[in-house]
Image 1 (tube, helix red, strand yellow):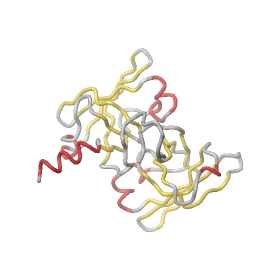
Image 2 (cartoon, rainbow, N blue to C red):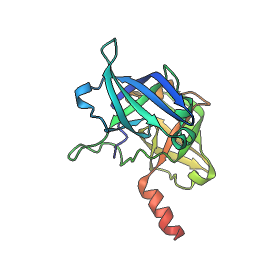
Image 3 (cartoon, one colour):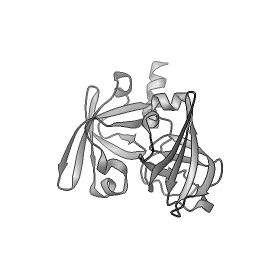
Length: 200
């Protein structure tokens, strides 16, 4: 489990594609001795398993993760290449502060940024999703976008918008987000199960 509070921005330093799957090497400033093999790290939202840990020539920690065909299809990972920057969060431990909201790292789909308006340091992002995901998004509800816990400020059909504060713009990849970008979306855990129970 995660909280949607990004603690580091990683950089893709190597990509290996085999058949429908892929392996990514991600450089970051997490101490290597704090990353165990098999650990779960949210990488731009998806929960991925660490398969290797090493050091790069510049002293950064480099960890490797594998992505299945399903993950590559459902998320932005299919477009990752060398130099891509990604939000990172290590999994929660019992007793950690839950600063955002409960996030599983299981991505439901992608949203597209349809507009950005910068005002007084903060930025409003307009996004659209498929109708199937739109029903899970509610005004003032929580949503995880590229692994970042955000509050939905408004909803209109399959469109919604969020406001990102200056601190978040600085410490995540949101500062570089532009119209046309796609981001990984995880709906609120409670909304998902309420909708399923209503269907049943």
